[in-house]
Image (cartoon, rainbow, N blue to C red):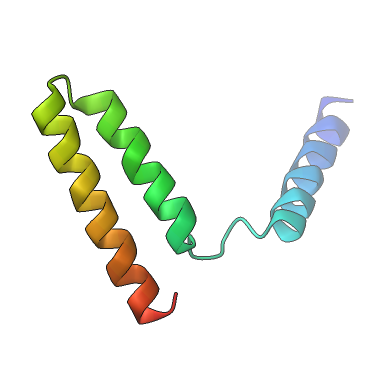
Length: 68
């Protein structure tokens, strides 16, 4: 019974990955969002947070210029 359940779970996982496109490269927007989330989690002082957000903005601009 457990083996059948494990096979069903594995098949469901791979089906989800195929449908959701989980192996695709992240888009510029999703990379920018992840960068901003990292800034919110790691920067405790306002100037550091602003500098981090500026870096994220620069990276997003560079990403869009490359056409990703």
